[in-house]
Amino acid sequence: MLEVFTSKTGVEIAMHRRDFIGSGSAIIALSLMSSSGSAADAPQIKSPPLTLQKPVLKLKGIAIGEGEPKIIIPTTATTESEVLHFVDSVAARTDFHMLELRLDSLENGTDGQAMAALSHKIAKRLPGKLLLLTFRTKAEGGKKAVSDRQYAQLYQVLLQQGEFDLLDIEMYRDRLLTEPLIDLVHQRGRHVILSSHELHATPSAEEIVSRLREQQMRGADILKLAAMPADASDVLRLLSATLEMHQRFAQRPLLTMAMGDTGVLTRMSGELSGSALTFASLGDASASGQVALDDLSKVLNVIHKGMSS
Image 1: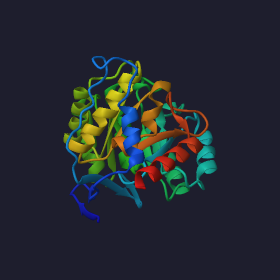
Image 2: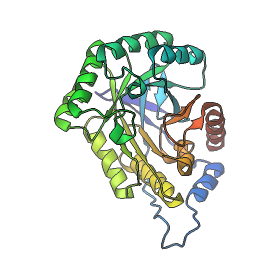
Image 3: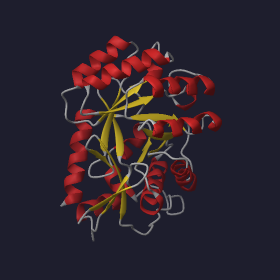
């Protein structure tokens, strides 16, 4: 049985009653908890109490946080014409839900008016899909280094002139500049992804949960954390922390991932761990470890069928 309540921020909370998620998912869970190290070296897998609340954000009929993780494909092109050609080539596909326009990859990505105009062209070509705008700074894995003031000024122009559904804001930019941006996003009826990227390590489980909770407290509509694992134990720690956040604290959908080839499992197992979104590549990848769209769609569908049986 399902009941849906809508909060003031537009996030819908769906209430599910389920006694058991199926033997298939139990096997997956056991495999995630295994590692080649000793018990002392293995990450501590916590078992927080299950809740009946499940945060779901519904945009354009797409339920983020319900069913299979929703797939985002990023652009990697360096010119506007290449971006539009890519968008036209994927517009008819039904195996992804959101397109991320990576402004930092574009030669003129810091030109707010040009990027706002481009967002309108893309939105018209993808009426049934969500559009996410992201300027990923070099400090967090992007292509360009900009000052916090330049970053905020770019986003202000996009909010005044652009057309999109979600805006990615890095949580560690200057809060005096980004907190007004979060308010402005909501005033314009758009939604915020607050994000954190650890490029060289994986934080402790406590730190992962702490950052996600801070993002939630600051008004994010989707909570995002990505980290670079050194080994399998880092991957398991991130999955465990994601599950803890999802089951104990989350009032918003989550997006977590371990980067690189070692972290590929996290891009597929979101329905088990509580991560509601995942990235796939179509052509060039925007980050290490991204799985090809065709392959990822098949795996997510297999997992969903197993967990629903």
